[in-house]
Image (cartoon, rainbow, N blue to C red):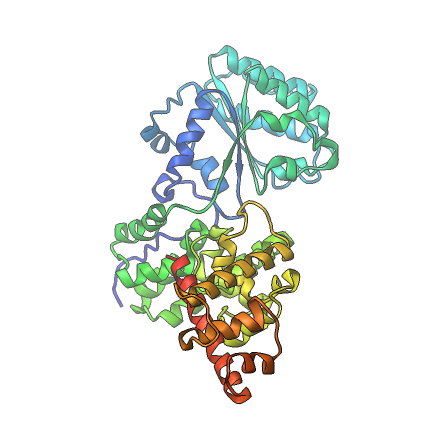
Length: 458
């Protein structure tokens, strides 16, 4: 074992507070600083652990702002964590904000607290004082959805906040797990407050950003990952920044302590480390999202995932398969024959295993959750295309031996639904031959279907 201090750089279980471990988000930062420079309010939206808090904290750092030529000299960024605000009041909020603002402005001694004042009046007074000194406050409100779910915070409260932003006294930056109108109580769902925000979804890192987060910290720690380890980490973690951090931590630790890069062992360690976070993430998903992820977890390979920050991680897909009792999807002749038997019943067809084909997903509207019947119609379209490819350029004739498989499927499933003995007679073959040839016909159609599916993933 090497005798040097252990410096595992992937230690972050909480939010990033240092620029040297804040990677990526270049496009988002560019849009964010442009919005703030124009005194707009910004809504950051993304699932847990995707990096919302890290973004709020690190966007205030000069070294993060510098590449975007953002002049922060007249801006005051105030961060407030609202995770404990499910049961607090408007007065609690205003007094907490005022304390946070005063703490951030030690160079303005006249900016003192007057706790005897009404919270709303105190907030307005402090904003005016800051503006009079030529500064503009940016109020970063983390976990803002905890506030909007709290019935103490009503339409009048939001109207007051909106007024301060509208007259140019302050900008708000909110972080929430879903768009604000979707995470609020009924009393404020129609509030015009939600209309003042520039929406910035926070999803997975880009491929280049994810690679930087994997590679650069290990190199700086003088224990770089090998190409095999980099590929393994990418496969296990996907592009979710928190997943990458935890997988890198496990791999780095084993590499330092035991020089161990056994894939099975590393996978086991990383999965055990992330499993509690997977459980928490899963519990917070909607039923529609769970169904979507369950279907994607069964697919061997797919390039158009609906929730890429989660389902691009092979470890998360393993978790989904484990918790749902499903296996990796693999089309068999039995699956295909079962679907062919239902080809005229779109609803039944939409419930078959063929719904998991990437080909089927590509034929459905990506922004709308399809019904079972719509999915069945997409499956029928795919099967029909595969069937016509089986015929090729030939003109259909009953007695053409090159079209025997095509003709069997034609009479049995696609054009007619003749009985087996009728088809055998029509094609001048025995019943025994017919059953043997029908198996071959289904296998031939399956091969074409698999070729189409492979091409759809490239």
